[in-house]
Image (cartoon, rainbow, N blue to C red; front, side, top):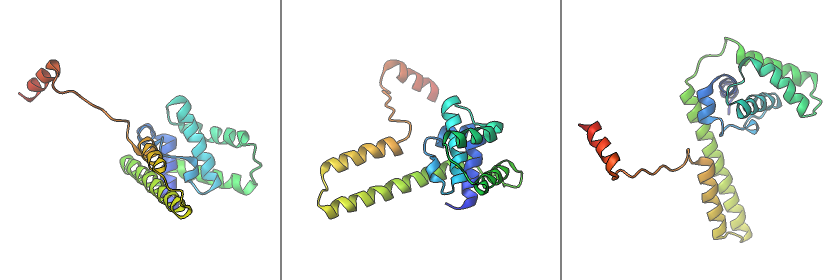
Length: 171
């Protein structure tokens, strides 16, 4: 994932409610390679998990709290890089990107990383001679949990009330 995409994702995670609703569960701090970006992603996503709202202007404060909670002694260089990333996110120099495009990209990245990991696990178990049907059962369950949408929705269109509503709607 290139730096520009990471900055756009951090910006959306900090500011955009619809992005967080659609892709927030697929975005993880570990998706970001830089420690500074992980700190910011952790602050933004944990705020959303708690309040179901984007962190917005409180991001700088939440980043400081996150660093304190991690009990890490971050170097001055890392702290200054974190401030630079925050300036980039909140600065007006970034071009606007479609939130839907970012959501789709996050879903695509999550799917790709899931399949890469599943393939690696499959090959490893095959080489060890430990490949079983239980692996495939677990894989399907994990795929449904991680890659599935909001779940399966079943509708019975043949109940009398639903049928009458459909007839009225189509008339």
